Length: 166
Ligand code: FES
Image (cartoon, rainbow, N blue to C red):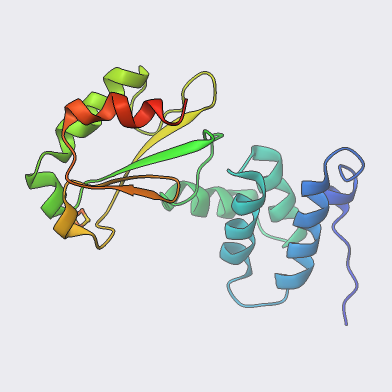
């Protein structure tokens, strides 16, 4: 078995255990088909987003051009290149939610938090995102905050809900 080690990762392991975990993930997937997507997926779970240096390590260790890694991370909206907040708000913009006023919810949240979609508040508490249908159309319009689901929302309910996460 190939015993290659993640050189880019090990240089950071003394200060940040997340790089050690990244090195293990790379070892686990390096010879598999689709390794790049799987490693990036796990890297995002580990770091919460995909910092530039992580993308460079992944490219180097998987022996891929950095441009190929950037191509994947910028193409899929699932991947985030910026740090995310402690609480991730996702407003569903699927059809059922949209026709029941999801866009107004987004505006209310933007106003309440002073950020735009895909931004994070300065205190790193909230990130605002939009999502596709999450399969809760009967509760439309719907938003999630991490694992919590809120349905039948109206803009006036937003301040009270966000206050729970202060
Ligand atoms: S359209 Fe929003 S949950 Fe289905």
